[in-house]
Amino acid sequence: MSAQLLGLHQPGTTLLHRLAAGAKLVGLVVASLVVVAVRGPVSALGFLALAVALLVWSGARLGLTLRAMRWLLLTAAILGAWTVWQDGWPRAVEVVGDLVALILLATTLTVTTPVDEVMDAVARGLRPLRRVGVDPEAVALAFSLMLRAIPSTITLAEESRDAAVARGLERSPRARLIPFVVRVVARARDTGDALHARGIGD
Image (cartoon, rainbow, N blue to C red):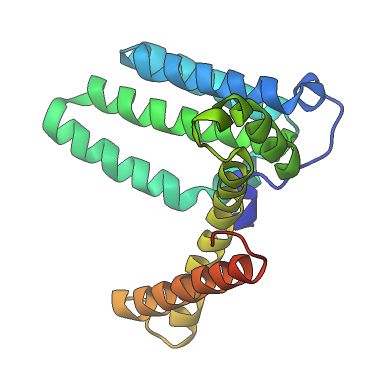
């Protein structure tokens, strides 16, 4: 379920599926800049409604996606409560609306686009920077690893929580946090060792 957060690619025939990965990446960047630049709670709610509509159009199962995003939504709610306390309701609606809209837009990209295509598009877009020392393939690989790591990290968090609950320690932050951190670090080291064994990152 958690892997749905960043949208395991779901094949489809919508216009969003048929668009080139590069065009969708550029669209995501432009949309993100617009969401951040335009201020106010009304615009934030508008962006949020548009992001939800795009996600539904992409064919993603909205209920499953929202359940998978529950921890992010909880974080957004906490952020909203803090912002209400500090700056009032209008600012809180703007901050939370913009944040959730950006998350849903990124999810729509990954639902409609295989990770390999995203990686290739990033590499192609960065090729002009090769002359100034940028390695497009390395950046694309890092981008791909980031996309793949977030769902797996959320899965580790859920597994650590379930293990703590099974031991009757659901109220112990330590019982959840320590196993989670250990497993995340172990996975990161395994990934680094695998890359090193293939001569990447030397």
